[in-house]
Image (cartoon, rainbow, N blue to C red; front, side):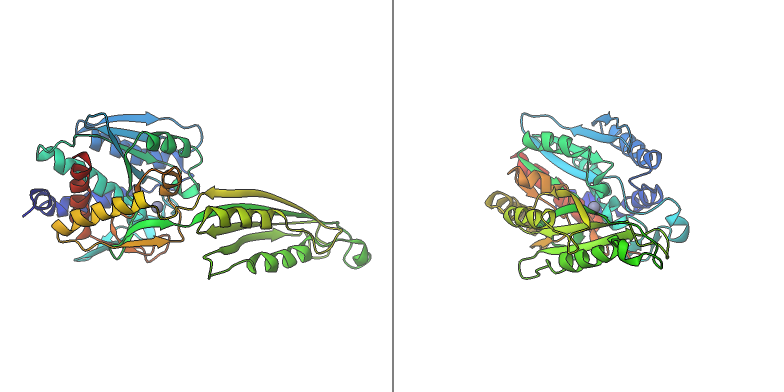
Length: 376
Ligand SMILES: [Zn+2]
């Protein structure tokens, strides 16, 4: 039997308790103090493992953490985000709840489970005296769910120094993630002309009517065959029911599978023209996370993990998703990247979000063994 797996299987209960603590430490991206409390928790936990924990202070959102464990000229980067999409107070309605094999709670799957796995992988290696021969650097960021605005440069800087990047985002059904769609964000603002809806209807230019045209045009750009989707997710417009609307706007989400398609779609969205020539369109935004296209280097990293997993009795297969992660940034730099190493479960960002508790020790063993293998 594998001694790392044995150690972690013996720690499944305490891993579940750690997960409960982290779920109950609610951490929406926009609540600086709440996210920092998760940072405090990880600082203490990794500090107890003789890791070097560095806090990277941020002005608006929570601080990021850089945790370095082990020594060596070579480096492996592990990524995990501390923020979730759930507001503080959500656990009053939906506290951490465990049955025999699964548990539910806000952020449990995306990605408090991955934080526990990263922590216990190091704990197991240290307890068993199995120091990795390379530097293991964790970046725990506070702003992934809002597009990683301030952590992106840090992630890219560390990735450039690393042989490989391992992302602790969750896994559906046990699959590892070897590609992800790129994400674009756009804002469309429409300027029209206000007028009295009864006395001077013809003198107004309805920004809302124009928006309706643009929504249909944008949604029609979706092409499932190519893997391209456009979602007009938020719209607003008008001021009063008896006023021709002078303004309207929309927030648009774009997903693409290749960089080339990202450029084509960015051009198409930014090139929209008004149907009513009297209306003005102001379009801003662009690709926020580049597509992570499958590469031979990432494929080789996956195969390495698959081999390591097999020795642990884990059957691992590659998969992709339309959801972006910080792995998109590192893969786009050409650094071998493997994602989905976090907890197994499903329903990210949904009320039904759940995690498989039995996957905690197994995934932590996979990560620990993979770190040893990469150090060879
Ligand atoms: Zn996530």
